[in-house]
Image (tube, rainbow, N blue to C red; front, side, top):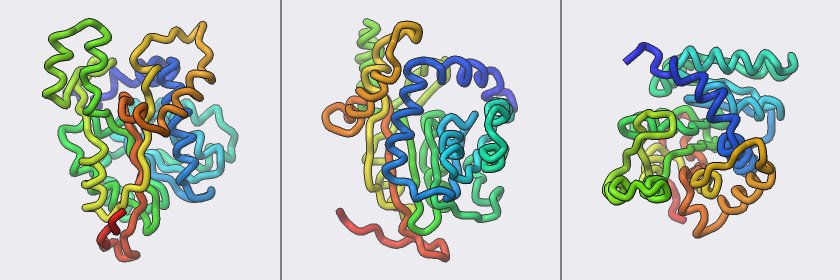
Length: 269
């Protein structure tokens, strides 16, 4: 494994995946969902595994102070390229830190943030527990923790739609697959990640779908009304049964930790 595991994937991910219909839908839907929960700017945002800043750069444009922490130098270079096209005011609100998410507490000297994002990262890790514990520790009292993860409950859909019936049958008994970039990915459930957040002193407050229709079908960018697709996906993300069938899900919680960083028992809902 290369020192920077994302070196070869940075360009296909940033210049390929994110400019597709699905990529643009992801950014839009997550952004609209986040706006339901975030404190007013200029609150500080920590984007763990934030890559090229696709989710946090729009927040910087709204006045948020953003720290993008990512272990990949190649991804942060892509972020820097994108930031260079912004105004001086926006550029001054974005800070890039090269480090693993699991080391965020030490690297950031224990700083705690009103908003902690971690989108599309857990699926590449062997298990979610170590990083989830760090995310909770990075959240300020009353702070928002936002996680996007691969939905383990819908692993059989893609191979079935591709008529890979043996793979679809096997997917019912696994939480792992090879993703669209050719990398191994792992699914999670809303229930399990919610339990992990509670252990870290963060009470889950809402969850949403992200991709449903635009993930299961190939939508050519040239002749697709991306805005219309995004609005349909946003509405599907807010309600059952659609959100339960989403390719990925978005889980949001609120930190109940004390000012000394001690966890408090989450109240039952």
